[in-house]
Structures are given as C-alpha cells and as structure tokens.
Image 1 (cartoon, rainbow, N blue to C red):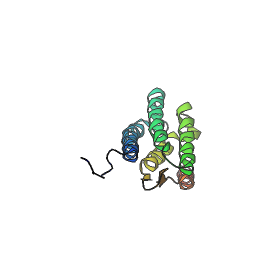
Image 2: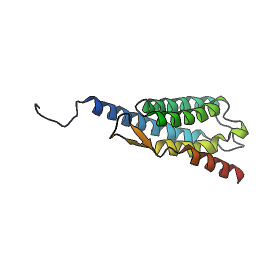
Image 3: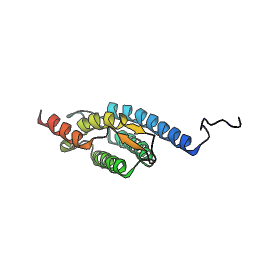
Length: 139
C-alpha cells in the first residue's frame, strides 16, 4: 500500500529476517550437536558430529556477517573451538562433550541488537566460557 512506512520491504527488514532464520537454523543444528556429543568413554560418531558442527558453524558465521568487528572476533573464537572438536572429537584433552554443552547454549543465547548497523551481539562472553571449561574440567 502506498505511503505505508512499516518497513517490511526495506533492506534492513530483510537483513533482520535473514539473521533470525540463521539463528533458527543454528538452534536446530545445536540441538542435534548436543545429542551427538557423548561423554568419555563413549565414542562420538566423528562423521555425524563433524557434519553437524560444520552446519552449526555455517549458521553462526552467517549471523556474524551482519555484526560488528568485536562480535565477529568472538564468533571466530567459537568457530576455532568447534574446528578443534571437528578434527578429533574423541580426543580426551579436547573435552568435546563439555565444550559443546557450554558453547551451544551460549551461542544460541546470544541476543542480536538490531538497533544499530552493523548489528551487535550480547551474551557471547568467551572469558566466562573459558572459566566454565576450567571449572568443569577440575571436577
């Protein structure tokens, strides 16, 4: 309708919709990752885990493409941890099951601030993540 300022046809609206779709897809992949991550001594299906982790990384990275540089750096750190897990998910010292149980909810729980462009993300605190991994490993 002419004169409608709802913004539904704006590029910004389209970007927000794309980010929301990526996050929904990331949630689905994350749920499957949580199911695939087995605690030692159970073995992780390396192929299934690797494929699902790559899917999760794809959606997280696609979201990051709309975000500021600080957010991109944090997302890169998450991708780096997932990459190590994909290479050898059953290596005991990688703590794959523990890291997946911490990283997936943290990544899914991020809140995208759509009020500014590039978008910013809140809730992706990698320093806190490192502390949680150390505390869990010490137990």
